[in-house]
Image 1 (cartoon, rainbow, N blue to C red):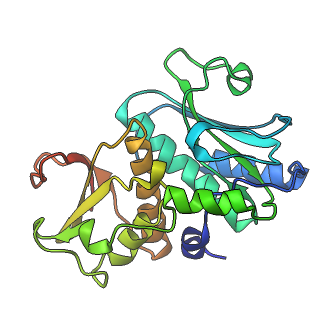
Image 2 (cartoon, one colour):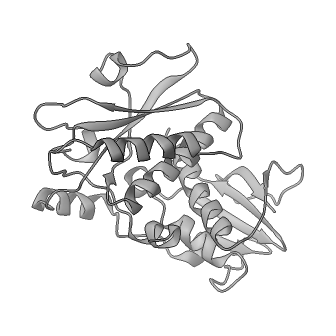
Length: 261
């Protein structure tokens, strides 16, 4: 399986087989954490720990997590670079896990005083902001299928409502130079399937924007930009993210994020 296939096939897993990760899997995942990179500055710490939680874990709107014993802890500072970097870096780990036959599920929230937080030693400005179970997927339960439906994980906004060319009145063609990379961005997971990302292609440059729909929107954008970047790399394209000094003014409510050339 290559990275494009992993992006297309990946889904959130909430049911696991109850067996902990093997030593080989733990080593592979820790290597993936060590190798994860980000084009953004910021402070990010990702750890893989075994908890052996008893019973079901019920993280509010994310459904019920069953059978997971191992969890990733995703910690980062509150500045924009750190939030983007956290999404960008951990999604690389998620895709590596999927290619190895392991499932994950992004869970953002507040973990102060939780079992997860008690296992961490962090600088004052770095907080635990997301966790993810990881393991071999178990059999799909009815509840999980219902959760996928309710969360809208199979419902994506149309390509031509998210990505534009030249100005915001002209939808981008999926066959354009950046079409595949943006199509893979469109498949990125986001909190409550909010899909906050938008993009405008201007020649050899892509300007990224987002609609701030929740406190997790920036993290979601980091995940999406990871999909975009990994697709570019897979196709042998070399580009850089940067903050443009002059970018096209977006529609009301959209915030500028970064540009890529």
